[in-house]
Image (cartoon, rainbow, N blue to C red; front, side, top):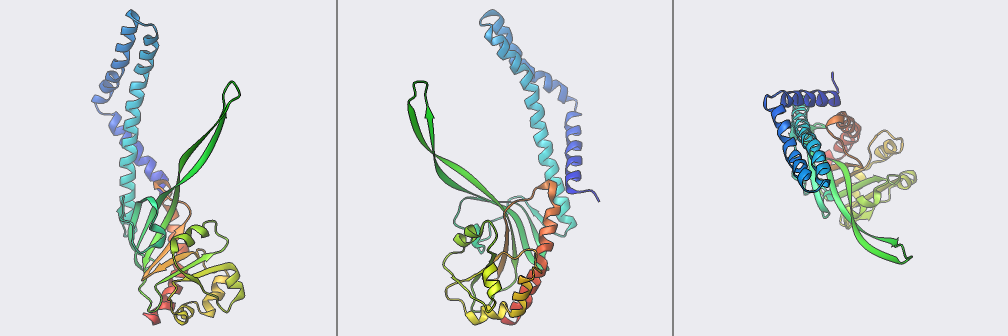
Length: 294
């Protein structure tokens, strides 16, 4: 079976061939040179500089038109492949899904955006996987020196975009436990997760090795006994033994969310399959553990 990259590029090239094969294509290319040529003609009788400017414009016009068509072909190909791929997996493609309100990581940030989502049965429960982007603004200082040796300092604000993949699964509420966050202490964005999680306390289990390697946080009022009935000694051993490829998640009132520190696009949709597969075993283990507590 063709990869998503191959399918996308084939669809894009086919759409581009359709657009450039239309009778009006070459006529429009010619018309795009007219403004630049007109400027060049004016330059012959006025300012010679305009001749060069006009000739550059005459060359740039058709190129810009071609790039616009290329962009249209890319957008159409992406939409086609995304919908086809979703249908093949029994999902629905959502170009701009609504941000879930029950995922702590997707709240209280600036310029938040969810894109390229797929919804449906994922890990045997209703789910939604999507690209999540937000911004932070950092104050920076730039120092420069002029020709006379005078130094000037300029302070400016730089926008930094953060891109993640989020998978939200509906697994059901647990009495006495509102929120849970499990994270490997070795991951690079643990501080980001902790900041999003809000007021919480850390749970110490009976396993020293687990406590050393993982951060297990719950809401302040969580029932400690209920938490430990989920994180049984058997589950702790499986986590320590690396049975689960993806161990970082946030749970909130029935919703289980996994977060990755990068994104996918139309040319690597197989990445989604890998990520869903990576969380399947842990999701199954957690569902089995919380089932008696519902």
